[in-house]
Length: 520
Ligand code: ACM
Ligand code: ZN
Image (cartoon, rainbow, N blue to C red; front, top):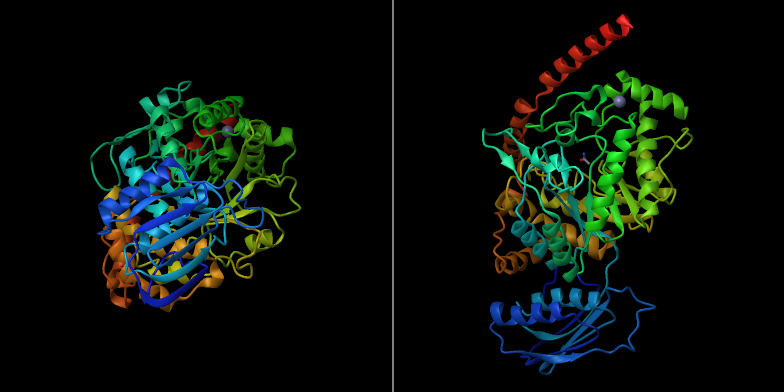
């Protein structure tokens, strides 16, 4: 009778169709939220509703409830909304907009999220997304009550964050001469003013921003600008192709530590929320194993291997961020709990494997804060042949720890190796973003796939109001043959990942170092 995605906690509907003429909101409401609902009613509904009933009641406090809690009652000719915070009111407004897009019934709703960290990640390193396109994406995720925007700002293929101290990062590092798929230059970066504008845009929608500077791996764009950041001071180019690169920042040179701290300083000036992401994924140790600086550092720290040196590097950055009042998030890398060094206890680890990862399950159960972005469900850069809508909705995040409070956060990631613009981003996002929002907001225990599939027709009509066309069912839930061809088409990427080039380059460098060492 009435559909709301993500599913609300309590929904009681009487089979009594009504017409309403006013909305009364009791609770704190921001000016922006007022404007949003008023404009929605004027532009996107056929109602002549008055929203004049705003009452800010400061006696309402949310000691017992989640700050995003709200209730909605509709009867006679009125809709009444109660919330405790501006944030709660803003989430209520997302529900109201869906209600006003359907037939109206007498109803009662009470709702709050089961998870307080519901993030969406956009990789702007592989492809540059203009500010207005980022804002569109933020509009979409706000509709589905996501509350964190993880802004992946640096990659092998492009450095997007303007630095005053290291201007070459954007003069050189923000451009790749061509891409995997064509000979066209790909370039762009965000000025600090633009980034502050994006932060403000998010905050109006009660979305916090987590910027990511991915270190020490995925840094070819920085190494191309400042060769002294690499082991062996190599003359490198901004990467043109996707794939894990062997050249990463040198963890033995003081300059690397100074550079990273300087960048973190500049990052903290722009991004005012509490979390900073320092990346740390896919950092092969081929260079570190050969490099005198890295080997000396390992010895000096009395560590056992280069993986531990990376943990030292991450802890060093996290300690620095702590002095600036920030909390650190890093991609999870395997470690043993009795290793000489382990990630700082308060560092939040972001898991991107699948639920079968036994070591990670142990970490979750140990009570450490973790974010899951299970890559068999929430990596929506992957084609529907790999992650169907059903996979996004039905995959259990981490075996044995469903809805466990120790899962600090949930995140869906839109990597962009193959998602070059907003049009493709929208194609990949919808309908999976609907499904994922429900798992994140309503919780894994509320899963009901049959009901969700029923609700999809409304979801498609509703999102069309915002200029998104959802592909056909045989695209997002493909059957065998289509699934096979979807995967095959995607895997053509294997032809252009430069694996042979990387391994030959590594072989030559190894021989050169061997010769150099002999001469000594
Ligand atoms: C990742 O997917 N490399 C975090
Ligand atoms: Zn080194």
